[in-house]
Image (cartoon, rainbow, N blue to C red):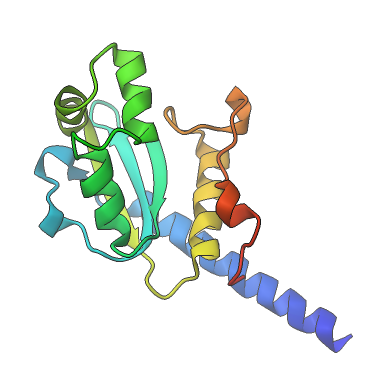
Length: 164
């Protein structure tokens, strides 16, 4: 009985933290993508959302969990022309019929805003859970989701969600 109570308490604490991260990201002030630089994005793990400038609709939600976290993911991947593995950029290139590299980076900078929530104290599994919940609830245009026959949970972390 005691283990069941402890598990329920841990689940409640975890779900409360995921909810706070989600609410924080959705309420965060957006910055114009044209102003995003290496110095304006923290090198901590966290979650981010790209929105369309025109109407504020969510376009893409992602996480930065590596050594340089958000800075690595946003500045060194999404906004670096020589990086060609950005799912966000590839989706934009396909839909807008634009070429890779600098053309797609210019498109992002001119058509989107960005908000980030650093989560340095949370486990990667908590940050992933917040991302999965937001993607499932909001269905941003450029995220790969189950609704369009693609999976959004990262297989490498889905197998071992340590930290929850």
